[in-house]
Length: 390
Ligand SMILES: C[S@@+](CC[C@H](N)C(=O)[O-])C[C@H]1O[C@@H](n2cnc3c(N)ncnc32)[C@H](O)[C@@H]1O
Image (cartoon, rainbow, N blue to C red; front, side):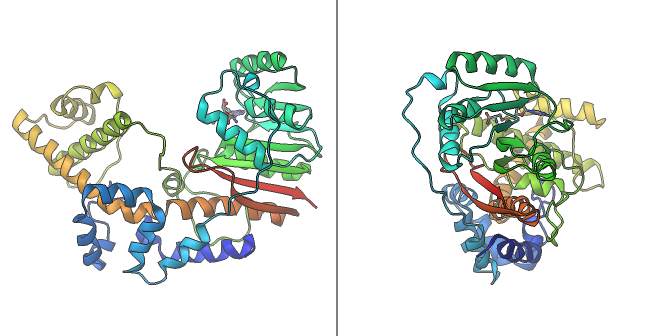
């Protein structure tokens, strides 16, 4: 199926099933679908912990579960399955080129380089950090590479690494959101994990300039989105909020058990605070400002005290604090179960966002392919959009 047809079908299905993925159980204790499909809510709320972990992680399994209640959901899975892109073998070059690159990052970079294709054009490495990808490509493709990066310290560190590797790599310290000079016509633009508006700007501005080829692995789609996502392609019906675009990239495959425990506790405590706030205010959920990490280090009663003072709420005694901590963990337990519904749509939403970028390039005259360039365990942001002009 071509990309535009896939986009049309996925767009229609995500629009039809929006009542499932849009509500956030963190804010709505029981999303509306719980009333319409109480048997599903009951099934999810009764799941054992290991199944909850599995279904929150395995979107295809979660979609299969939902399809038992909503006929039609099953059509989403094949539309959001992406082919693995063919990879070429890279020249053996030992470890010297990879000074300073953490292990998993190095594997991502090598997988990206193996899935992208040399166009013979000079390369622009967009938002390249220390330019590790650019350095590898300068070597592998024997091309001149310009690495554009806003942070002068990263540019200086990258220049030193490029000199040590004796490659034709030059750093341009510039703001990717403002520069009019880069990329230029006939360049080959590569971007590994340039966040949100940074990759969108590359596509918009680069296509206007006549960039010869793009290889882009997008990430953090929500960055630079104000209230609503502004599609780049002409076609979609679906309107995503900023939170929807954030949902597309919320899963982590790299968290250590300790980080997971800390994250769970932070969520449970925030829910405990929310449970207390609802007892003293008639409003439903109200979003709150980010919480200082230090407030999460001591006991729940201290945390609640900090939150109440900041939000101008009455203090509670320690017996009540225990009760709200218990309520917070109870809501956390339910949240993890009800979120399976929402999390089933994470990858489909990410594919929708990537298709928007890919189809926008097709609409500007590029031939485009979209697939995954590495396994999800290396990075869940493993989609690569490759586009060739003409
Ligand atoms: C997620 S990192 C990716 C770095 C590199 N491509 C990689 O994969 O290792 C994003 C990079 O974008 C840079 N950046 C952020 N805002 C930028 C801007 N407005 N202009 C240029 N670079 C920017 C950051 O400093 C950071 O190095």
